[in-house]
Image 1 (tube, helix red, strand yellow):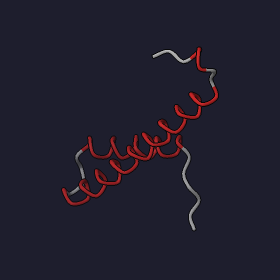
Image 2: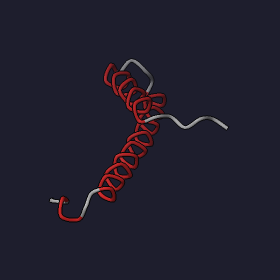
Image 3: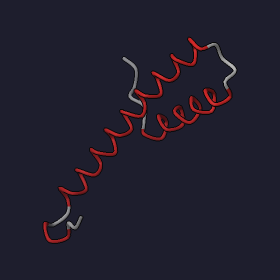
Image 4: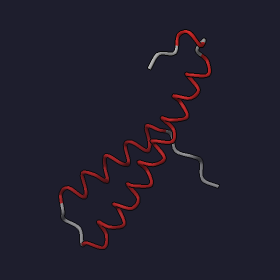
Length: 67
C-alpha cells in the first residue's frame, strides 16, 4: 500500500498541476485528467486543514476560543 502524502507534498503536486494546466500545452483529455486529480488533491488538503483546526480547537480551553 502506498504511503499517504503529506499536506506539503499534496500542495506541491497541486501547484505543478495548476502550472501545467495554465500552460495549456496538453490535449484536452490530459488536462481534464489533471484537473480531476487537482480537485481530489484540493479536497484532501481541505480535509487536512479542517482536521488540524478541529485538533487545535479541542486543545484550547473554552474561554480562549473566539470566532
